[in-house]
Amino acid sequence: CIRGYYCSHFPQGNYLWPPIDFLVLDGKLRNLFDVEVIDAIAEGLTIEQVLKMIGRISPNYIICLVGEVSAKIDKESTLKIKKKYQKTKLIITGDFVRCFPKWSLKYFEVADAVLLDFTSDEILSFLEDKNERHYDAIYFQNIPKTDLCSSEKKDYFSYPPPDYGKFRLERYNLPFSRSRKLVSVLTTFGCSLRCTYCSYENFNIKYRDLDNLFRELDAIQKQGIKEIVLTGVNVGDFK
Image (tube, rainbow, N blue to C red; front, side, top):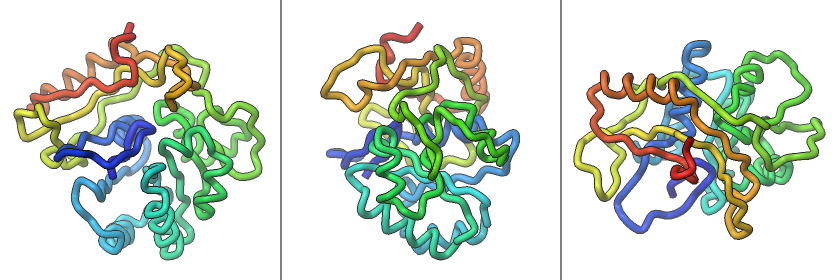
C-alpha cells in the first residue's frame, strides 16, 4: 500500500513515489533534531525488521504514516511498536486521520498525537515539548478543538531542503521515470476548489514560497538528481 500526502491506495502498476510528507518533515526538523527515516515500503521491511531498526535508533518520537486502506495493518504495527518502546511518543499522520483525528486516536489507541498538516512549523514546538495548549495542526488527547479539518490560516509555507541521503531514492520510480533517482518537491498544500466528493474539500490551500522553492531546486541539482516530481493536489493553481 502506498501512503503519502493524505492519500492511500494499492497501486495497479509498478511504481512508488517518494514520501513527500517525510521529505518536508525532514527539511523542517533536521537542523534541530537528529532525524532518521525508515521507509518500510520502499525497502521491503517486515515489522520485525522495523522494530530492530527502531531499537538501534532509540528515538524519543516516531512520526508514522498510516492509511485508510491499510488501517488494520497499520494499527497492528503501531501496537507492536508501542508495546516494545513504551516511552517513545508516537505521532500518526495520514488521510483519514487528517479529517477524523479524534476518532483516529481511539482507533489507534496507542498514538499520542495526530499531525494534521506536515507543512506546519507547529511540529517544532510540539517536539521541543513547550507545553503549548493550542495547536492548529496537531491534535492530541484532552485538548478541545472546534475546527479539526482545516489547515492553518496561512497563505504560504516553506521548508529547508531535506537530507536526500536519508532516502533510498533509487527505490522510487514512476512509469515515465528515466533515471535511477527520483525526488518529490511540494509546491502547494491543500486545494482552492471545494469538490464535495474529494477528501481535500476542506483543505485550505497554501502556496510554497518561490525563493524557498528555488533554493530546494538548487540543492537537488547539486546532489546530481535529474528527475523531480512537482507535487500538490492542485499544482496548476500554483502562484
